[in-house]
Amino acid sequence: AFEIQQAIKSHNIEIKRSHINEIVAALFGFKKFNSLKLSSYPIYIDSIDDQLNAELFVERCGELNISLTVAPVFQKYISDYHFLYLTAEEISKLVREALDDESIRNNVLTRLKKTFIEFPEYSIYPYLIAQFYSDCENDFDEQNKDMNYLYHRYLQGQEISPTWKPDLDHFIQEKEQNDEYKENYVKYLKIAADLGSFPAQLELYQFRDNDDYVDVDEDIENYSYSTYPSDIELALAKRGDEGCLREIFDRIVCDSFDEIKELKENNLIEAWKWQKFAQYLGYDLAKGNYKTEAIYDQGNIFAAESGRHDIHLPKLKLEQENIVNQEVNKLIQFYANLDEFNFTRYLDDSSHINWDDEFDWEDD
Image 1: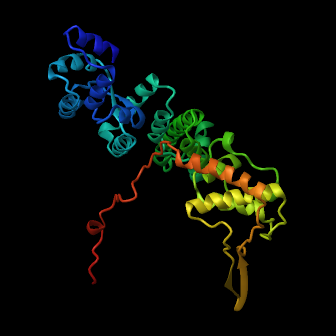
Image 2: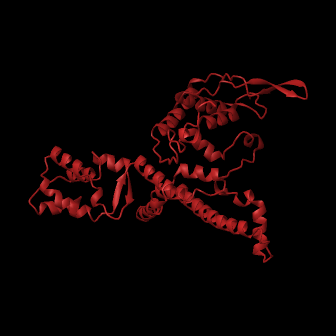
Image 3: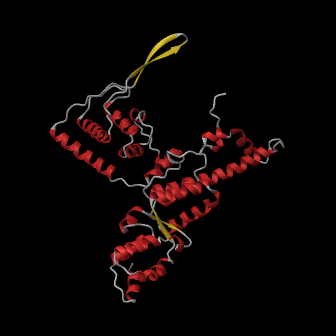
């Protein structure tokens, strides 16, 4: 902005620095500079000239009473800039399109890598780069035991039957690609996670390929409840995940047999903290899910019980109530102010199958 301001001054035109920021934002397609600053991500592009928003530029110049004679100055300085600014949804859409279209896949991947070089502190770029390598299996060898056995015989120099050779060649090709994708997928997810991306950390854990995020609790009673490592479970609960909220609450108030424990003061405060936060989100953790089901076994009927009854937490003292409210407010503030980038590969309302084309629904 400073360089543009000085260049405009040489034409005997005075423009505030804040107005220059607004004009630059308009050229990138944003009505306000704050929107560009707070709600967009840069991405590399070879040439920016045909990507600028001339219509919005003219509109904002009119609103700010700035003469259009400054247009060549803006164009001169911005044409040397190699980054567009996209919203979270726009950059997600670009990546989704690239993953579906081989003709633009490498181009978009290269642009993301170049952007990450210039903005190495942003976790969004390694997180999105990882998506280009997500088409891999962590247990590829386990899923292909027979071919993997032949592969190891091949590596040992043992003779392979001509009957199996074409299948083995195909397996080797698939294995090499899977290994390459797996290595890069984990590599970039780790980078994103280390830069603070929780979605990348969660995706990395779900891929089950690194021990850095697996925290098996040595306390068997506690471990029996949890399907996530403690750090991920807590992070999900703070983000409003109902399942993790219930896991944490039940672990506090119930023993290993789903019987309600006698709560000490600290556990009582913790239980109320999560219950009140869940109520803010519209959940009732104290409500039970007890049920009985009939099981048929060799002609006999048995009643099977599962779940637990409703829990009636003891009332809090005034001092305890104050502590709980303070903790709940912290959780609510975190949840309300949470602003992290999540990539969704397939939109909820999208379908990759045209059912009418695939099936004839008319009765025979």
